Length: 169
Image 1: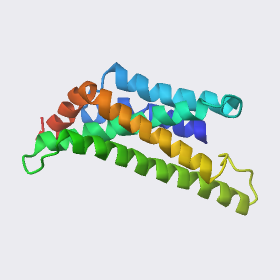
Image 2: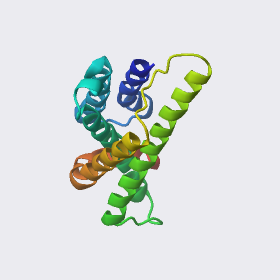
Image 3: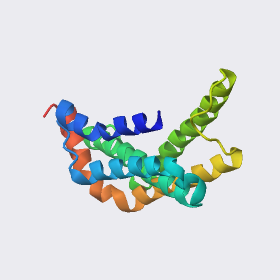
């Protein structure tokens, strides 16, 4: 199930280009694919044997979420004069959005585990407890912060592509 979900995520950059004309370029596609690859390799045992593997994958995945959030938020900001989003606000917004997605993911892990157990199945996702979820969220925040500090300049072109689609170009 995890591998299938990961595989579907790797199709998103191509689908955006093919279906909506938003050209992401090779770096975002590589970023998404690398995040999925790291998660998939982790499922082979690295999550259990390498202490920092989970931190690495959460940071990478959170960076993907923050990058997507920035591209969309900045495109809307460019599209309309009715909204003005100062850079510090956008940075905070990226971290908050990334944490929001992280909370949804952690909740889904707990629910999936409990639901599988309730139905008599072996849980697909391993849940290590609330403390681990808090640490995961800290690394999600780090991914959001890294994009806010270093990634927004690299994502500006993508925001302009999305803004062009909003204009109907």
